[in-house]
Image (spheres, rainbow over the protein chains, first blue to last red):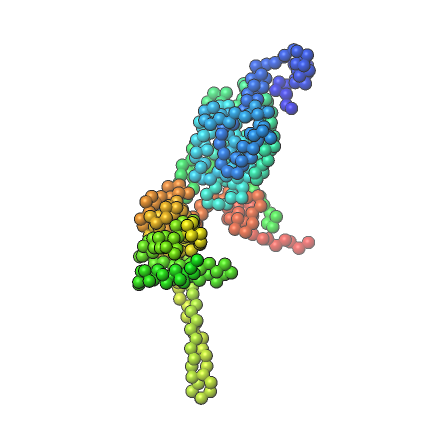
Length: 217
Length: 220
């Protein structure tokens, strides 16, 4: 685990703090307790697109029990949600709605691309009607590979997100954009064009990789 | 249940002069279908729904087929008598003609009441460009409504008499009909880790420097 505060000779490491906590002494900073609190109450948006949503629902039920990680409160409104789990195929017709939901969520917010379709379009990638990955339009924090991923994979992604939240700084240049003055937080919503979405991607978020390929490789 | 030929004969008895034909399916399924002319199609559909021996009260499926222009070879054989008095010769004459393309709508009908089916109906448009209207069968079977909208959306068949003919899967601003065989998809290739077949051709078009044509290796 990454230590939120860089340990020096004066500041105790997180292992030492855990030891002290067991003895009844709580040494903390505002940053640590703030991140501790919000990393254990990540409320996902109640939103599913395709078969990956079934695995997401399974993760929220008793056998896998996402409540162990504090994320059982699936919110029916984006205004109350912290986490957008893009679970399933994003068609070009649905993509503007997904971006709109993302823009309606308050900061701090996080996004999972769950499954092959949400990551890249998956088996439908070269089709005329499927978006080639939701990261064309919104910033994705965690990619969960699988078709569909097991509920354990979703829980693992959630634990990785908790790690990420615990490591976040609240001040300075590495702070998340909503804590930096002047940083843009919402993403432009694409419009329906005659053949494709306009624009087909948000170049500020995603650029196609420049690829050098050898013939026959 | 009656065979397609019997159903055709019943339709012809009820609608004399109507255009009805049985399209044979040569495959092992042998699911022959009835090709109805556009003029009387709706009246004939109502007859199929209401006539006591058929009672085809449920339309389970509507789909479209796109037939492109194709070249057909007609073979006509004729016998030519030998002027020398020998046995007459059999000569095959092959003529090529262009069969213009058309769009086809296929309906699968069942009877819930009499528990039989399917009876397959086909409707054809005049061509693929400007005479693309067929009568809608939504007034006869309500279950056709969304599926005819889908055929309109993806194939561009216009259903006369449909109560609400709009696109259903693609967005309203979309310009083309994606399930037509000559549909050209948007040129939105980005990158593919393992391209092959058509996708490899696209990769070469978009990354010509990265995927050069095969060069000859210098001999060692």
